Amino acid sequence: MDPIPYRRETPGTQPPGLWPDYRSTVLRSPRKPLIALPHTLSEVTGPIFGQDRLQSNDADLTSQHKERPIGDRMIVAGRVLDENGRPVAGTLIEIWQANSAGRYFHPRDSRDAPLDPNFTGGGRTLTDEAGRYRFITIKPGYYPWQNHENAWRPAHIHFSVFGSSFVTRLICQMYFEDDPMLRYDPIYMSVPSEAGRKQLLAKFDYELTMPGFGLGYRFDIVLRGRDATPFEADDHAH
Amino acid sequence: MPIESGWATVGPFFHAVLPWKDGGAMARPETKGEPITIIGCILDAEEQPINDAMIELWQANAAGRYNHPEDTQPGELDPSFQGFGRVTSDAQGCFTVNTIKPGPVRGLGNSWQAPHIEVSVFARGVLKRLVTRLYFEGEPANEHDPVLSLVEETQRRETLMAKPDPKERGRWHFTLRLGGPQETVFFEV
Image (cartoon, rainbow over all chains, first blue to last red; front, side, top):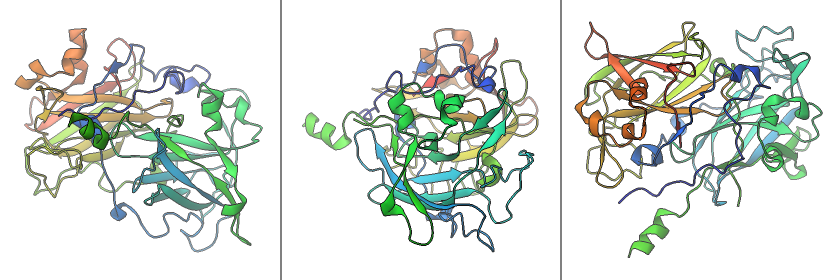
């Protein structure tokens, strides 16, 4: 029996390949039309990771070094769901971000802003049975970049999620509500619909706030989903 | 209904912050199958090396079986082989992967797919990952591969072929071009 395919990308919801406002896309975007790949076993399978890919403190970016990093501590938590609203359990989430001064712990980031010896800015965790995850980190700073005159990235955290197959892979960025830089940012603005852009905003959440420690933000992530579960399809066949 | 979250570029800073252990060492000495080395290079539309890309690979084992619950084919799983790799390109835009040649995998209907590796390209300037496949030049099964046959401009199928090293057996060269006259075939999944 053929595998149950995933739903195709909803038109008008994802950034285009070529987006000249983001200059680096010009030489790095295919111009020939993409060919629709059928969802065979190669696409509906994908890597599944366990605890062996995690180290202690991977989910708490504020306790990976001797001292606490500088910056506003925050809790970022939420759920990973599929397009049918079902939780994606046991999947690997990776995050990475700049420090509170807007500098990445990376040899290529030569910006004139301080590095924080107590902050690397990388985290990993697995979602639980209900698709939930939780990180403790600090609020990333703004940073200038070379894309255009007076270009600044809004504060953001990168998210990488695998989901249950090759098709469900996702890399996105989380932003903050009311950030004045959002509408000037070609990466944020490359997501075509307003609803899609709003979905990338973390919401302040009083319930997630840890008294005396840091403020809480909620951010849910949606991965590609299927038209029907294999179970339903089996029923149908009988 | 919720829709898939909007993609964003991986940016240039992923690698140092989140190292991935053994990313290019997909096979171990005890892994069953023919050991191969893939030397990949990634170029932009002006044939300049892309030195800040992340490449992920996903493949079946030598028996053509994926290490995943949805693959219920009879072939045996190999406990020493997951089938996933993640590498970053170097200053020359190149990367090296040590793996085994995958077996043929069932396609849709009664078809069979030639040995292939699923490839995802992430980089600064790539807002949404680019998906392609790596096939092996000279493989007789390529003639009947249902995915290769979807590429109507037959000369473009060449862009999906890893080429055997003329001197060293088991060594394969694969060039990814994100644009330009020899642009690689990319797929929408």
